Image (cartoon, rainbow, N blue to C red):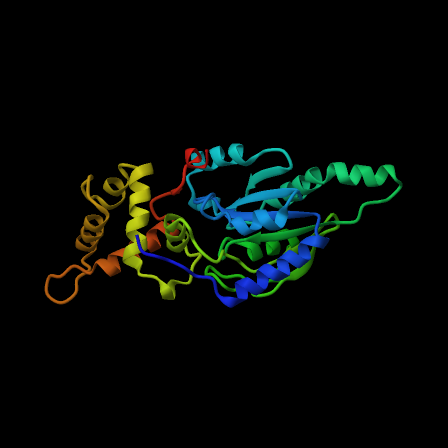
Length: 285
């Protein structure tokens, strides 16, 4: 497993600004990738949120295993915290559910204000999460306008931006932030293979092999069904088999396993062979 670290200066700047803005927000909307709900949890967010209500949104559900996503939703729903799924690709149906969830999480505080004769203002929610998890796309969908730049790569959002999404909800968009050091390199590798870390610093073969191991644990027959290759191969053998199947070769008959890794990563990110989740609920228990 390769050692991966990526914490550029703009992330540290964003972390400080988020810490300051936390004083004026009522709650946090934390976006996580439905395929890796644990690995896509930034431990810094726990420190920032404190006791404020939290809504966890599992994004990219169209790329994840629906049965495992359902298990994760049950796992995350608890006191002062709620979890729902959002399909950002379709961009419909979840806007109202998010607003209702935010109102419910803040109901006690708002009821207390009304009992004192104070009409509550719109809820102020900070939208946060790791890079490339869909925060800006989410806000564009809720507000009904493409106000924020969004792309399928990390590092697009660099500053904090307030948006009036609904008469009941104001949203603060924040840059995708990781944490200074990955104590668990499996977490780093999962983030890397799904596009949350700058690809310029990565070796595709290493992160592909880590992902292959995770898939073999959760889906023992996946590679036989998807790539028509034999089971019981180690990750390096899997890459060689994919290269052979697709005719990826260097000079002579040398197999191009780097190209095979890139091809596999593309297939995984696009869910070419169906929704795949790389973490299971039992890992969080």
